[in-house]
Length: 481
Image (tube, rainbow, N blue to C red; front, side):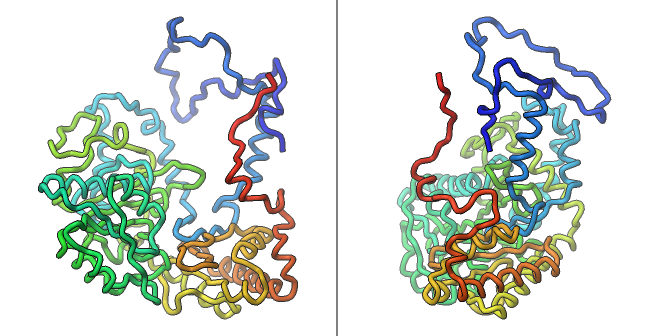
């Protein structure tokens, strides 16, 4: 398809960008058009595409048809919790009394927004077992960064400057070691046992006076609850370190088990995954961070005028963060209620175990046997050895059946990995249909492997050269003159 710049013709235009006010608002614009001083005006017009409203509408509708989201079909992206998000939460987040709040309004004019944050803190501290929460971080990795800065500030406040190392399991999300490094820490990786748990002997050997903390996901990235979690956090605490909980997989345990009860001192939550904001493609997000009382003095300061602790790490984002993401989370939690949150987690685990068993019955090999939590990992090493068909080939074959591929080649400790997370919002009928498709792909892999090597065949484009795209991306339009 053509780019919007390639559709451009000089002199064409439309009225789509005229300010629009919802009829629900029943009001005229309250802010007059600004008179921009000449010193701040452009010297020449921006090079924007010139298209008719008809062309513009068709262009973006075509783009929408070429994209794939959870409203289009099955989207089992392991470790990302791409579940369906109720539309009522979008309605709430689009109420003009929330969307029209200005970031520079005085605090006394925003009591409704403050109530939303107070409810979010109350509910999420209850779910996580934490004592306080900040909503400034804009995403999960940003939440990790904030949480590790809290740990760093804690050690600094005690004059404990020798703690230079963060311990991270080898099955961790890639953002964990990156976050620790960005905060100025050395990273020490801990091997996993054959059953995917943290090796306790290796952990004991790794801790010492230089240990600042541990970053851990539980359930972990292979979809298992670590049976030794209380011992793990105790080992870190006995060494003088603190424990950080990566909340990426909280969807499996919310309302059932709390990170604070597992011995964690700080955690982040992906509100845009577990608590109902559609995500992917860069946002929006919210990586809310909860902590125990010992870390509360170090929480980020607010731009809205509250008196911050002298020990605060300062702001990590302007104002209160991505407010509408928090608003969606509150609407979601108020809809589910206490028992609903627990039921959502239990259904996610039930769906994953049902799908895992169906996959094994079809002939696939799971990397780790037994009961899983919200996700599981297929190991296609045997399939690749016998047929030459890789995990990538299987993932590409799924596209021909209108299914978004799962996470590929992660965790790194499984070399031909496909990680499935069906979430609680998929029905048994959908899971059955997907498992039938997967059984058919497995049959094709043995009978006609070339068909898998060349997949997809029925999508808008075939298989792109992903290596070339990564090494030589084209990210801007080149004008002729």
